Amino acid sequence: MDFSSKLLENAVHEMSQLPGIGKRTALRLVLHMLKQPERQTEELSNALLKLRSAVQFCENCHNISDTALCEICANPKRDSELVCVVEDIRDVMAIENTGQYRGLYHVLGGKISPIEGMGPQDLKIASLVDKVKKGTIKELIFALSSTMEGDTTNFYIFKQIEGFEVRTSTIARGIAVGDELEYADEVTLGRSILNRIPFEGSLNKN
Amino acid sequence: MDFSSKLLENAVHEMSQLPGIGKRTALRLVLHMLKQPERQTEELSNALLKLRSAVQFCENCHNISDTALCEICANPKRDSELVCVVEDIRDVMAIENTGQYRGLYHVLGGKISPIEGMGPQDLKIASLVDKVKKGTIKELIFALSSTMEGDTTNFYIFKQIEGFEVRTSTIARGIAVGDELEYADEVTLGRSILNRIPFEGSLNKN
Image 1 (cartoon, one colour):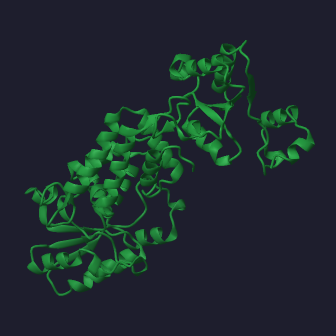
Image 2 (tube, chains in turn blue, red):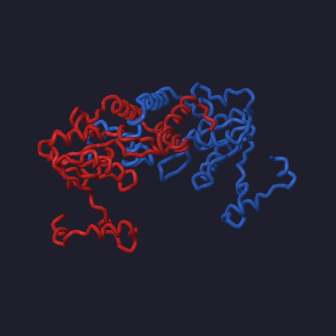
Image 3 (cartoon, each protein chain N blue to C red):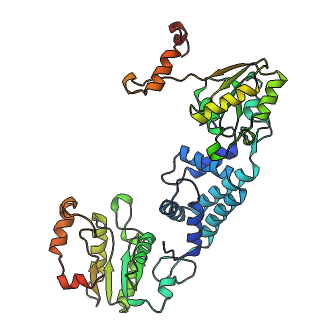
């Protein structure tokens, strides 16, 4: 593209570094900002700078936080004996949004994936194993994505904590609430039959 | 969404003010920035702030510029007697990218659209009429979009400069190069037949 302003070209270039934002979208966004009051661009830039410089990760669960210990870990009402292992911060938000979980989290920061060069040492696995060794956790819930990498990570952690007194579980996979059986994929439907639950049990869950 | 960090929430909120960026996309972009080196977020923020505070609009053609007179208007090799009237900055870029135009531009900053509350006084029409009145322009090329609003704007300007010595033209509408006739819409195909050009003329254009 042929920009008549170096400032514009630079802003578009920086914007197009973001994932999923091409040159054209970046230009559209930047030109939009030029039409808005200057204050709005300042607020965006300052919010990003402040986040990047001041944000912390919880020293216990590695969730994003404004303080050394995140709100969830610092909450005495949460069950600290129950820990849900997730890939990243977005999974914490997703589970928190359900309002169904009262335990703590442990954010791994990814999953074991040789293709992407992610090994166990790149994830927060050691600190999880340490917590288990201390004996304060009664149950670990694996809530990683149901892929080869997720399963590998689950299994790796499972092997590391073998022999310690901790229950392990994994979130239920099955047909989504409201979905029709005929459109479900076979693996999911197969699993949801194998892992069926007592009918009475399903009644008081919601 | 339930953010465990106010800083994150604020950054996501500001990001989602941009057009076409929802809360989820904003979160994805912001979390991506957190994984990148801090320098990258600084460069983006600074580029936006600098653009917003330092950018100017050319005093002659109203194109975006780093200087009082834009590169195009300041270029003595361009034909200053030929002026192409466009809606906004992106149209200038699009035409410049073709490498086929050696005249100057006049950026209106939109088109007359009562629905969007855009009247002639909101556009840079007065300065265009002034330029025509001075008699330095030989030809005005209307290159506005081919919509009701675009046509209205063309006609409004045309009426304002009636009686002054200036030729007016409009860019050719027709079947795009490489397109198949059978898939063209009837209006475009109809116009491209009505506005046919001599065959010899079409040969030396490209």
